[in-house]
Image (cartoon, rainbow, N blue to C red; front, top):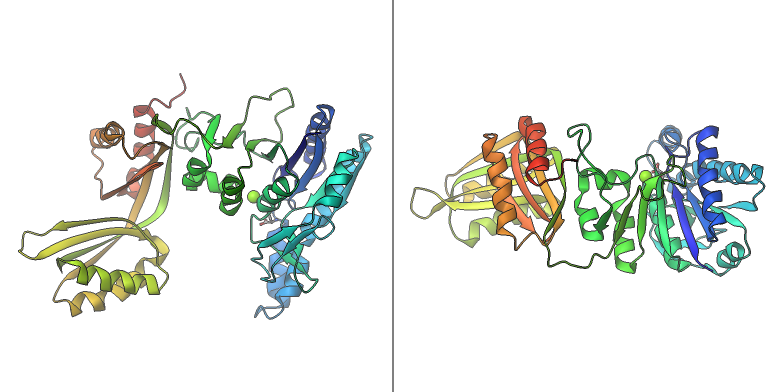
Length: 410
Ligand code: ASP
Ligand code: MG
């Protein structure tokens, strides 16, 4: 018998009507013959308000074990309510907490990692025709206490259960119909992407990560669990409206799938830096030590002999700290200027096989140049070409790229 894991997010399962819609979709899947484990999040907003309670009761975070016991409660409520919605339809269903489902974790409260799932009993339960509604986001630590898996962790619970149960797929039922080719707020003609590789899904940080927790996608990739991302509100007859994420064949053929962007970027420019690896090493060591991640990097020779200009991008939140840290190593190497521009953004073309495709980069730069958008720095990988641009140009850039790559719906 095929097993399927379905996961319902917090917005998709908030309130009685939505829980009922979830139950209808689950019932349809059961009629198709699958043995079902359903993972559910807390209703939207619930975990936030529980976290606020915890912050009030334990302002210094001294008792993370009790904190987790509070945080995990939202999922428990929703799992039982969903089980009741299923029973109202005459289906056999029961809720299970993380430990009842056999989800074991390490002891890092608030950020626990799943170490093992004892899935035999859960497997037998669902094979016997009961729909198991499992609380997402939680497990059992080595000391027998409830742990939570980090925000957005229900996705991780679902993928991990799909691995442990050897399920045919993990169906992520959310409040959108899948992953779109661009943010529909910027690009009204953005369309549903029907197939994505795990790598592309991970690259789509702006919307991909909103739809699904990154750790969960990484686990799915490592264990080759097929993900189907769909709306909980599309009826069972709208079967084709979803994004399938799996190992994509055909890496040879370059395909652009989507345009993504991030507005939270800053750019640092270091002028008159001594050329050669010494100065670079000192600077990046200082940044790395402070845990500051940098993204796009360009170094180019200055007009002055033996000097160069370094440009790199980083998260805006880290910018002021980075500026502070860099001034010292910079001046130790001789006089140079460090300049910060906080109003930057990054646009990315996401797809597969992009690195070797000069034509793709050419299309990208032409489209941006036609809109007179200045490109601050560029980076390419197998699945992404990114350009640093002024924040004010994001909307125009995303629209221009979406149409330049033929992604606008006909
Ligand atoms: N309820 C948890 C959160 O809000 C887990 C989840 O929804 O995935 O982070
Ligand atoms: Mg989520």
